Length: 304
Figure 1 (cartoon, one colour):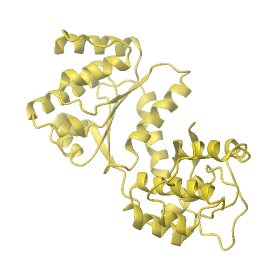
Figure 2: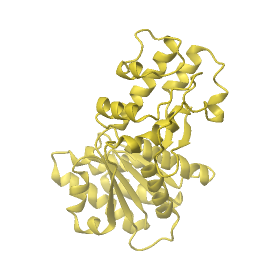
Figure 3: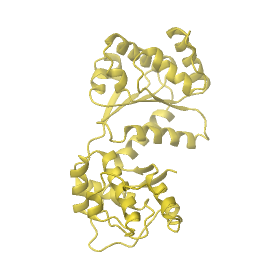
Figure 4: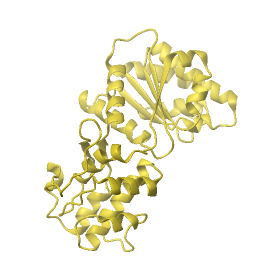
């Protein structure tokens, strides 16, 4: 199950002088009485914490997907180092569009992991549209099918995740061919596109004059400011089914998490989850600083 929680307005919160009353999300409060194994399963589940940068990108996606069709469809590149939440953001945007549209297929999320050529890119899109391409299909056949099916689905936004896998290909000719495919979809269907990638992906998008004019770039930075992290920690604690307050939103905790994680969001979340599992195993029902230190790995024995 995935729970959503919003970081307090402004993205930060002041450290508490005294322990705050235990506050849990309504969906989590009902889990407190469950067994250790059941609560541990919930701790390991994915959850969406809407920190400020994520909220801004969600709203930009809404503008892109809901605006009137234009001859110059807009593009947005979301760039960051691995582990900083790009794929989670893409999944969240896709899920929100489906919820808001009554589950219509008007937003298509494509993972390009391992897709190093244009045929593979079109093939991934066809799979998501429910019409897998045949091996015998030429590139032009796949292109025709993709355009027809996206038009029939009234697709309003396409999300291309793991774009760096195309960019890392040694075959520059194929890389340029994939860029031409993206341009063709945007021009033919007047279709906005959001691209998620790492490293130099944004640079080779900028290397194409047409895409450079269409795409703006937003970077998801590493978490380096402990004050900014406080809001995230306070929101995340509300999604943990522990019976006692951990008071994670403390500057010393935030600073140490940044040091231990290198500022990578996935590493921060993994530390918190592992520490929460230790809190159940050791019967404290709260996360202590020592558990944060030992949270590189999960408890030695799996009790799920």
